[in-house]
Image (cartoon, rainbow, N blue to C red; front, side, top):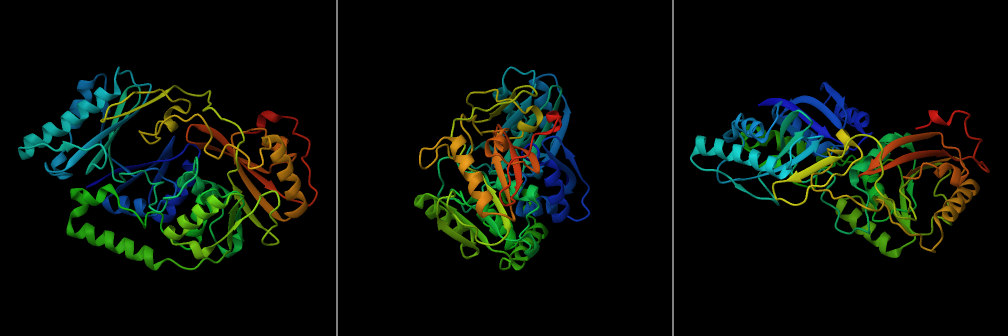
Length: 446
């Protein structure tokens, strides 16, 4: 069984994901699309990508696509697939729907028609139909609708890939592992000796540091979790099970000690304790130097290196956006269908059951009650005094952060933290450096 695989990712990460696919599958012909990467592949490629990808949200296997005008067309689409090749009648299914500008009145009904088609095909082929399991289905399906086109995928991942299997302790709003990995990829930090030390001085529950440590130690992103494909017929054949075992053994054999020091800390003892426990479960506790310290006082652990941080934003951040049409999503479990905006095609690939948020993906408050403006001004002054030779990468939804810090960014990378538009700012620290005058044509900046 060979088909097209689609790997959805956060908006702005498509190019980075294409590079990752090329490293995981040398020679694969991957092409970027808005919201993800597509490539030709089958069971082997799906297994390798689920195990190794740090940036993809899921690995989706396209099984059918066609133009549509009504729910009856969606039923016909589901009926065009030989579902007995994927599951048995004793197994379970679930259908999720994501949509951009879909003309249908109810995405729940669209999911129901796909489910009806699958069950009718199975009843015709095997004399019985699978039941629905909304929590841990054997066959998770995703229907993606644009205004006129429908694509039906088998979700080979099951749970979203940011769920690495090690996080149990978390703070108020933890950074997703896939976003932490995207930040590191955008910075070009790969854990090589030439990359130098890494520091996250506001680590929260440790996501950035743990992702960095696993990268530096060669630990595959999916090495500690299970995947939906393990319960599907094409992957349960003897040959495929052997390939899966070989992939996992090769991944374990590739693990090694980190060539660079990784440092992290937080002003909260509670958060550094969370980070330590998460790092232990992730197999990288010995690779991370964790300290409870105030970022405004912490001294650099080396003469030069890379700082990577998702600081508190200090205020409530509403999901914002001005491009594209509202995005809808729904699932076979029912519930309210909500327009989420603003990212249209790209944001429509968010997890179907992600909920709209009304605050940032970082901790909101500052430990000493300082305002955001005061905090960032003090942070920049501290860096200029004590961190010359370091490069700082800061994720923020505030497009005017460089002005607030009186620092001139050398790079800004668009990134989306769920529905929140952010920038990953790069600051190259020079002793006593201050913000340069803004360029004459500010419109050239992202």
